[in-house]
Image (cartoon, rainbow, N blue to C red):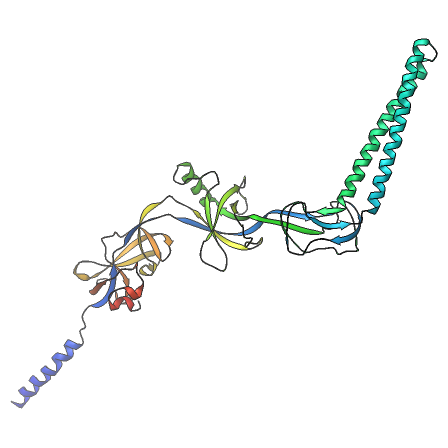
Length: 384
């Protein structure tokens, strides 16, 4: 009798223990994939370069008398930059002008001789040879006059070049030569300074062969529209993730680089405030597909299974069913799902560590398009 009572007591104590050791289905956050119109893009790295770059050099030699700009300032085409000692060139111009006067006097004299020779030929008082000599002297005098006038133009041009002026609008660099130095002329001489024009500014980048061919096919088939200004692009600077700089592609090289298999492209970017500087790196984003309706899921809902990508869904009887998916491009926090699930599936988007294939779970619906602190259900706040 005692033994029976003990057995009954033991069974009563074991029953709650067994019930406590068998937990029910664990909660997970589930959501239906959403459909949204998206456009695929491609990103490449490039560098900003000035649309114009000029190395300012002297066209005449001499002593530098004046530097007429402030380092790093904005200059306009025609602004005075440097002043070279003009005195030698003023003297050369005066000498050349004097030579013109002399040449004109000789032209007048020889012309008078020719006119007299014509009268003398009619009366026979001059030989044909002498008349021909006077005509020849007149022609030589005219040639000398033209040469002297050309020397005046050269001397006047050299005097004008003693004022070194800005050839373009832009931002000027620092002066590379200071006052008092003797500077030489010519293409092989040292540069006095540099001027860059960054309004607009260019962005050069290299695109791989496959991306370029895919883009051309889309344009040819009318899936991507180009206007007269070229295809629109977006650029992000290294210190931000936002592609907030707009531009348009206005140049593509005429052949691919055989070593790298890439093509050099250029985007023209307005830069009215002059913020963008030549040499800065950036990331450019171009349109890679026409707009299409895609199925999207949060990136964190996708698992890797060796070479496959898998999402966990909740099937009949609330049991976990893994499904292999084909991924598309990432659009913000959402990933395009090309195949594998539909908008009717219930996909586990949080609590994946508690989801085992074939195991029963407690699904709690969430809206992953909203911030996590605005989603219902405690499971949405729990780590995976």
